[in-house]
Image (cartoon, rainbow over all chains, first blue to last red; front, side):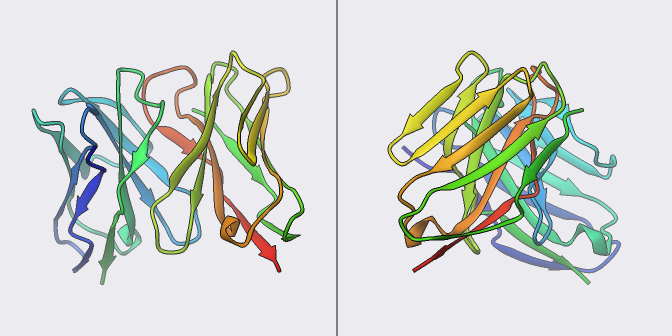
Length: 114
Length: 114
């Protein structure tokens, strides 16, 4: 069984730039959720993808967008980066339409916006 | 949307003693309640979860209890060990019984004193 992986590990960007983060789901999982974790806080839900379609979204602006591919891997894109976007970005994979059951996290991408 | 409150924010216990972390949620439709453990610099790890049709679930030294009427659930760790030191997060479905992401509490920093 292959676990959840994410790339890159770390990233430094300048305010106003765009960034793409990548996530490979655990083998057998078809649902990917993305979270933002600020320092000292719990993860905050950004959105979820099930079978290549968005399946729910948290309280994040449209400049946060995503994709899921036929192999269930996923991308998170953030446009017009702001300083407050600096955080750990986590993806989690799970199995099934219910999505919320048994979410397993990847190691995260640490994004720093300067 | 769901609102999850978690307390205490910090809990210090002697090695071998028990630790209890409590969470409340707002949406009565919520039906799934996971707990995650996050060590410094690592990903959140799913340690136990409970569904709303069950009042208690145990896994070795860890147990979770759920009171749907009062809308609260708790994590119990018995015979604590140094490796239990970490930040623990409770969570509930962002859209109650819906199929999307998780809303997390702010976390409890558990410190095991030798």
